[in-house]
Amino acid sequence: MLLAIDVGNTNITFGLFEGKRIIHTFNIPTNAYTLDKLKVKLPKKGIKDTVICSVVPRITWRLRKDLLALSREKPYIIGKDILVPIRNLYHKPKQVGQDRLVNAYAALSLYGAPLIAIDFGTAITFDIISKKKEYLGGMILPGLKISLEALNQRTALLPKVRLGRPSDFIGRDTKNSMLSGIVYGFGSLTDELIMRIRKVIGQNALAIATGGNTELIFKYCRKINKINTNLTLKGLNMLYLYKKNT
Image (tube, rainbow, N blue to C red; front, side, top):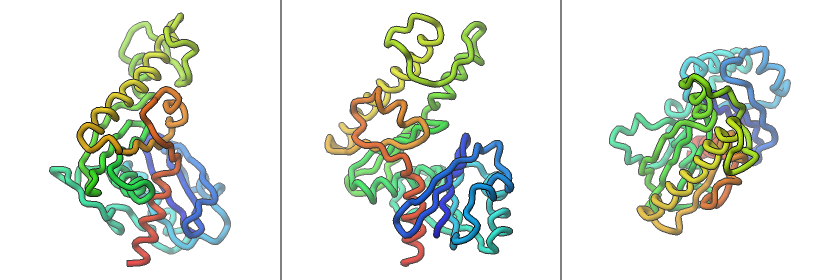
């Protein structure tokens, strides 16, 4: 059994795999992670290997230490022990987050090229793969929750609002005006960027969405073709199997 771990700024997402099949997932808030919380979630036995993709270095090394203590096996770290086998055309390839490369690799493996992989997480990332299966780069935007929090934190009168569906397109109170602006606004932004990207890489490019806020924003987008909530975890499993077979 493989334990795949995707460390994000908001949540750490864990996935258990038997071969190519994902059998269980769970989350621990990144800022609340402890070894004891991990122990409660993990099966008592059966985990053979672990692979970690992380955008939070301090958590990477805590997890590495904890997992080594639990299993006496060093986890594989994406970008260090396993390199994502995709041609990276960034001007400075090392600047690309490993999570973005994992998403690009997973989406390419599952859906082919050309492709747009969109992750609606703490930040929103667009990762673009050419018809030649090259990683071209993409866009990074503030996420939905960050944007909503900024309205509260950077203004005098706007309240703290929990992210959710607006009741109307035209908000009739402050809360729903904020939610409408964020949700419909990012839905429209997503559609426009997809259309503009397709003009560059091909109108047949699929748009695949993943990330914690995908289920919410998908209802407000018309240009996203598919959602794959566990895309990053699946990519980690694919990379682990690739490593074992090469």
